Length: 286
Image (cartoon, rainbow, N blue to C red):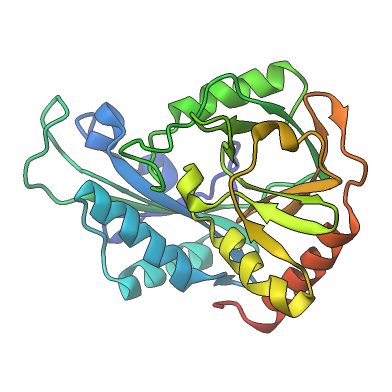
């Protein structure tokens, strides 16, 4: 049962189920004081965390890059199952967060157990299409956190506020080279002349789980895909375009900076969305 914040009423904190309103994390936790932490958002489908193996692998990758320790896979998976059961959730958004734990007041880190939280809530309602705006602030494709899913999200919060002020629901970042990179929490695909394209990881975007699955589905769906640098201006002139993420799956882009995309969704978007739905029906841990 979800509370007023949309989060479930019971969470898993450092090895135990705790009522959410009683869960306590130290004000000296490094996640709070410095943003030192990583996370994964996973969609539970029919009571099962979809693509769990891929999500856990990426959580470990992000954590190791920051020098953080993640509990074993079986521990995290059991925690997810316990949270879903405790909150009577079958279709849910699950978030696994790992921080640097109790640390000094500063950026340095000493030996300390990590803080690990597993929480869940209902899946948010996703509109069939999204209006997006281009961020005036680029992503740094050479930054220390590039390609990592960290809890340092203030940049995204600021950019999303910029988008909402302009009537859009998502913001799209260029990189420092003026290439298409990613959204605040999404990957981006576009279609021109019947060919599907998405930025390569070298553009600075996150290696999204949904992104990777769609790339793998393209050959079987008869869709030509190119991973290549894309000038940021090409998004607004695309024949069709869509966003991908764990909670959105595929969401067609309707407008870019107020300019309409001709098809939202377009035929390739619809074809790939159907292939993805079939994958979810056939295999919950692809």
